[in-house]
Length: 143
Image 1 (tube, rainbow, N blue to C red):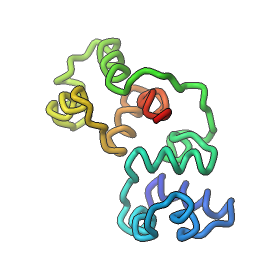
Image 2: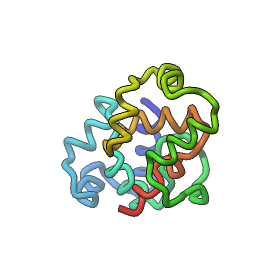
Image 3: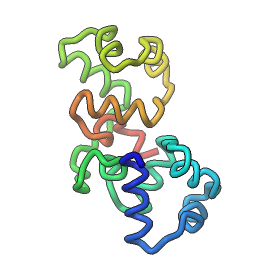
């Protein structure tokens, strides 16, 4: 099991919920929930936000990046502005940053044009820059 699967199972157990009950509460299919467990899928960030809100936990807690529910790192800036500032303050070029992350530079430019990164990319970016996912995605939390 990956950290997300373990944490999600812990949250289900702590709240005495079945996968089916969670699926109904989030208005998604039980097949989708089962895919997170059986196939190691990560939810789209919008679903992950709904899950975190449902369990009243941070995204970092949900994905096993933190053992605490710290919501203090949230901001209202757009994701791409946060990413651009993190890259600039690191002093590493966009190309090198993306290479270090084993992501294509093309992804960076798609994000600039408004595409929301896959959840696994957000997790990797948060780890790389040592920031919370909440900080990184910024105003996506309020949508």
